[in-house]
Image (cartoon, rainbow, N blue to C red; front, side):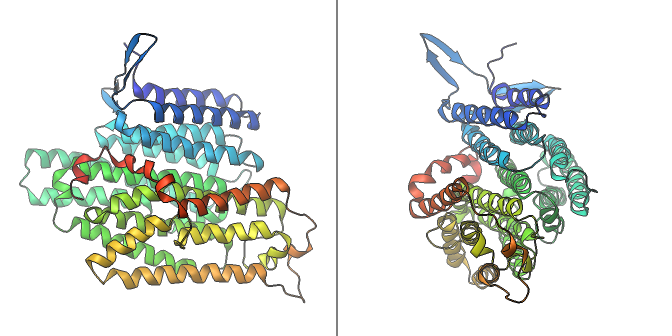
Length: 478
């Protein structure tokens, strides 16, 4: 058997490396740096590898196979998918290079690398229904690093585990239903049932409104760095999986009203996220609602595929990842420097005067997620706002309310950061620690990158448009 297969390089090799890292868990910094080097090499190789999967070196021709058979099933990783592979390993690198500063699970490097490889396998496995089994395995691995050490398992993790497990039979049953549709393509009842099963399963995976209740609960109890990584990877890969399903099944994408339904689901999810986040009184729950809002924007983008929504989705991947990383890194740093802060808005009163760069970084990351002009996510969200305005007026007020309420949250947070209470000084004011030069540089780099991406999207974001190239049938609807 030839070992020159793409799944061996980008799926099985990192899985083997993650198993090796298990033996290094008592050396967390070494384990993190091994993971970082591995992710850089895997991402760089994916970026420079020719899409034809063949090249010449030292006078010899090397031809790689894009398929690997295992348990009578196939993992197919084509040259067109390598940009997605590179992006996911870049995300894994960014989180692992940021994590060693904080007291996180020793298993994070090994588990994060394994999770990244497994998410890639969900996009590669054929038939697609077996992706549900891999996702369930990812969820079980995720629980290992989401659950706080030495504490009782929080309710958010239990809900997360239950909802993701419930999604599995829906996807498995949809595969059985698809077989029936293929043998009787005119059976409209089968088509409707198959579509409902697939969409319910994907809705549970993505935690769209109103299936999102565990998101803020988990955000409150988990480490921000870990939480943001787990759900950035899940959100990104499940959205690409939805693209794959729509691209593969003509009967699904040709179903009457399917894209309009996706548009409404996206709009209501981002509206619900905006309403709920504006009412928040705890800083550590905010990220859960912003993930709900970003999921809403992504579903809306897929629903607007014929109006350029695919490009907007592709342009959002990098700035969204950086905004989530900036927020989670900054909040983790604040928690480490000010351990008496309990996560409530009242406990961060006057924090700006103790940690000005951290406070500014929190605000900038949220403004980027909101879509403020000149920041990272503005180009992608501007495309979606323009697209929705061009097809119907009904969406514009709802999206505007969501954006406005998100800004209300940012203003409330800013008010608490800069307001002091002379009668009862908060813990943030009584601490005697200052920001280090290193943390100031890191936070400034985050903010500068967000600004550069917003001002120069063609330079930073255009390479990401190639991520959706494999979905040729779906993109014909543009």
